[in-house]
Length: 301
Image (cartoon, rainbow, N blue to C red; front, side, top):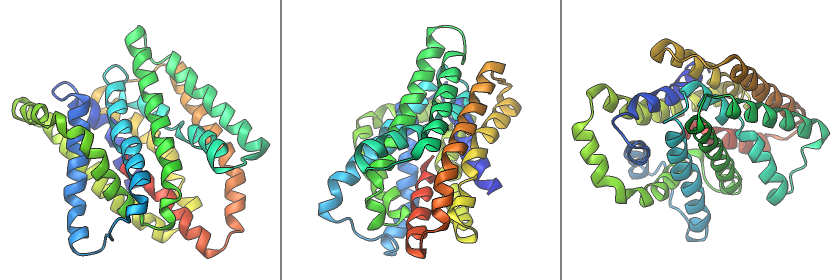
């Protein structure tokens, strides 16, 4: 669980390191391409099954929101927002997930759930407003919030798919669809690879190898060793890991008000999750398995 939190948290710092020499679209393209290449042997070994034609449209929408939009918006936001602040804003993704679930999936979070999500949303707005001085920082924070909304949209789109496909299959096919619109930027990405400093290229490679492939493996091991509700505690540790890495490696320290907003985000999500955690304890083994797969989709971070 600790390794997973550090691996996911390091993604925000790696993006920040890579950005001076790479554009947001190039980082997204290279990271998704590395993911596809790493999962390709699973397809050849038939550990990843075929995609049904009837599910292609939903899978494409999942890939465009969860892979393309999320990656590009997050990288664009981190051009003016430090990695720790970005991680705190992305932690608000469950707010948007619940809102979309209420609107389109018939979810009912209850009063306690709504109160917790309200607290988390207030915290996210506090982080966005106080993330830094100048319109550039505010725009960057809003872009990161849009990335969180894109991620939440992809979760809503993916939920029905997880009844038919494994987490690895969703990541692979979602990455394929997410890669397609970014291919037009491939010539520019190749040029940036040739001109970039070595440590910035290593940061991009780490995004694909460490923050995606290794994190997917450690997260899968975590899910096999414990329940989904216990494993989901990793998600609360990701912003903490990102803040620590950002301070140690880059010397960035968020303002006190931004830190307070981040605490409110995590507290609000925790309060909203209590009701769902109680409900999970009464579900049967089959629903628990589906829930594990849903939580496991966050591995693409």
